Amino acid sequence: MHLYCCFANLFPGKRKIHYLFTDGKEMAEEYDLTTDELIVRKWRSKSTLKGQGPWEIEVGEPVPSTVACLESDVIKENCSNPVFMRKDTKTSFLWRVRNLPYPKEVYNISVEPDQRCCIIRTNNKKYYKKFNVPDLDRSQLPLDSSALNFTHANNTLIVSYKKPKEILTIEHELLREVKKLKGTNEGDVDCKTQ
Image 1 (spheres, rainbow, N blue to C red):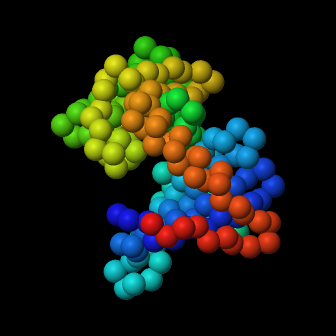
Image 2: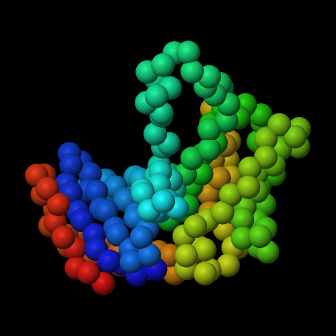
């Protein structure tokens, strides 16, 4: 997957970068201007009919459906269901699962290297989640169970995976390139084609 083009915009407190790849995929990222932390990363591919597919959020809060908010008669998910989302820090990949009221002893978090995923299980069989680490997959790096850790507080399970040196180096280089982009509040600025 090679980069075709990217655009940068500045918004109050945020820098938004939009990447276009030669295979038709798009990636959009938002960075906090004060902390340089990644707030949102989402991907979109072309649909089978050559139209734009929906955005798939990799990092950040899922966007609530505007249709469900506008129509009160629509069947929607219970607000007490667990909510799984990813929010990274500078040194770790971080996943949060809200609405899990069980004590810490109930959770079992493991790495399945042959399936290239992590699994959250509860002893009481009330919650099960299998998820991958796309950053490691893209860089073809192995999963390491010693990098995995978790905690539980305020009905939220927080799973962290310490970023390997290779990922930290890639992110540092990318952030340096992103900071070089001169975005404006009014419009897009073209990036170098690579």
